[in-house]
Image (cartoon, rainbow, N blue to C red; front, top):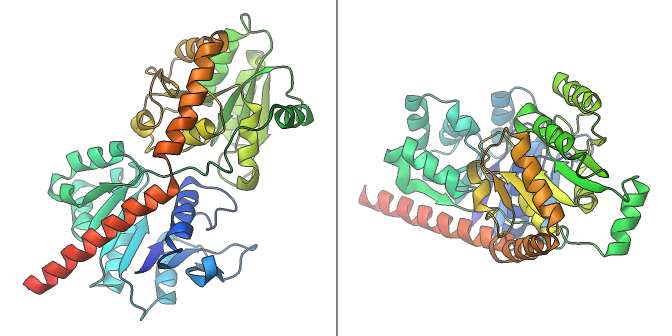
Length: 387
């Protein structure tokens, strides 16, 4: 197959600055390119050439300057004008569909949804008009798939789920000595470290976690919060929310290490700083791959019971789920439970690692996508013959 992949304009691929959509997309298609030809359209970046080839040339990434979304898209599509593809996949931007359909009127199109966000911004007539123009829809979780099926029942037959994997070689437990060296280097040895990794925005719930740690200080005197991330990948400026959480931690006298932006090449190291990983998100996450990365790294996970997270974290088995996502006390109880019960901690770590190996494999994701492509191509071929 020859596959065209259309990425959002915000961040480059490979994900040298970060970005969950960009990371998932690159991880899938560098593996897909081991057996298929892939052309991927992405935004330009000063550190990257206008065209790159990977996987022996089977993965070609064409980059165009990022401006307004549709100007970017039109410029990207001009780069592949006149070429033919067996499948086109659009990553998480439903509004791109009509433009791509106009450029490729007869090629099967897959819309890949990483969250509910961009479909939720459309009116029902707008959404249905867009979905009529696609041949298939893939999503990162059963939560997204089932939510979309309920909203758009006329298109329910088009949906498939392809859960992203995790790189279990990169994200893995470190030997104790290596972990201790890293913690000493960062001034985090000897404390019980509660780890947060993600964007520092209100919806990710860091303020809730700060209040949780404040409640635990008396019971766990050496507790410390480690907050890894920025408001947006690659951005180092302070936002009003970032100032708010810094001031909140000072007011509550919570010891917090704010690392700021950490490049993707180093994020896996940050998981070695945590004794427990907490995802206190308020969002209805599509999946929240940060939890699978924590599990693969050998850290017990506490997470909000929101969206697709429950497909990753099985409560009491591979982590602990908190039903009240905005409750500092509920998160504090879960953190204390893991800290005070070594047997539970060991069990959650072992089960988390096993679950990642069995259920979150990138080649499994690729197999599911390829099967979906074949189904879509067969249906499109049958439709042409019937006409």
